Image (cartoon, rainbow, N blue to C red; front, side, top):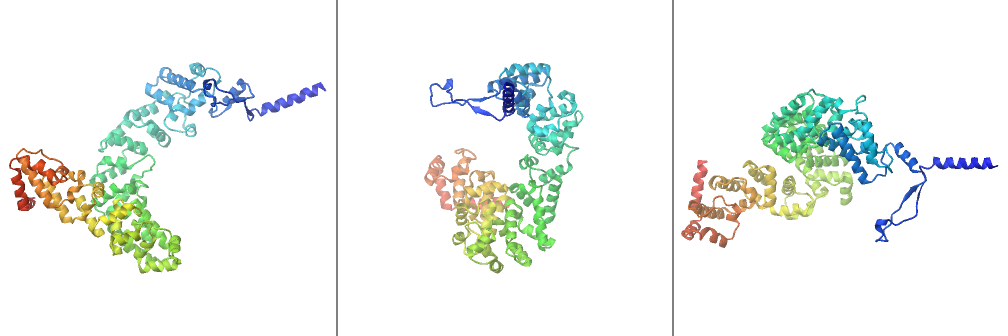
Length: 597
């Protein structure tokens, strides 16, 4: 009887021990001594049924080691021990030892899981490392940005110390000393191991070869970090050819660094084919330059794939090769990311309402720019709003394609027409131009711009191109126009005259317009009179040279007289003479100078 009772107790105890990992109870709520002054602050102590020895065993059996309850102070001390081991015992440089010890958290936690958290972890780790060397590849590769799963397949089977692979270590040091971020080297090691297997001096010569192409060191660092394949084999000939394209288009070679990122995958051969294709289509160097400046994603997102997709869809519609070339030439902006997305959506819209292919071809051929300029609602939404069936909507669009953009555009096109133009085609061309400038379709800014800009879309584009042809970057011109929209309300001839006056007669650099775009908005009479007076004062040493345009033009008449007329005894008489002559002398002089130029 007594023996049976003991057996039952032993059986219960065995079951209890087997389930200890799952049984945890909360102790009574107790006040922490540090919070005695605040009776509202309490802490919950969690106690396990198992002893500290059993708990330690559980921690050791944990594969991740993340369940260890070790204080922050103890962890900091343990990291210092690991650093000392790497630096003093193993001979790593100070920077390498510090980086590895601080950037290998999984390895560090795994290492700490070997010790009882209730004992002195710092002392235990120090003693452990004294007699037990670690596999240095694990923390080293983790510190380069690789995950534990990736590291498992990359750690050499028969090597433990980094110095055992002196070639790999030497190539790592070359990359490190050149400036390649360590966090980027993990990707290199995983995807292009051969980079770390070059003989001494070869990797250095490869980096130097890219410098010889005309690239600066910071750009090479970025390119190699984002596209490690550049260091495989010799100098990438296709990449070098893309660089030459940049040079021919009037772009700095280093500008390519601003177009790449670590998230992209770059096929330089496809990029080169894309550039050659656009050249064959008929894009001029200037158009390609502006296209890459404003829409670099065209070439660097998907390595130009979207160009071929667009070209293929047009051919699939039934358009002939020369017709597609013509469309690309007439609508160079269709290749921008936004326009391409809008165009594909508009094309799908027409297919969804079951429009015949020949009718779609006609609309694409005549309204391609508008299809790329507007983001459209879906066919279901448009049919519901108009209370028509799809075949009826199809007939409406066939009869008047402009009506399609009126009813299907997500932007405030209907209210805009009333304030912008009575001619729908003129209005749509203007809004398409403004969209290329960066104005959001469904915005008050677009409505305001429609009121401010005068002229047809092609006239506005002509004035825009005038400023670009004068020597300003297209992005700079966009900013100039947004600061002073009235610039585009002047004729191309007047803009050319003011720019010529600024650079050839006044001697100011063209960039002065960027700092003060309103210069182009002042009438020639004011420019002539004030700058003639300023030039007269400058010849007599009564005014500083190269004052800003705004200082001379923007001040009131009274202020100008005070600071530019009365500062010289003969100033008032000269000023009256200039005003009375109505700019005759200046105009004659300017026309003479213009003829000489």
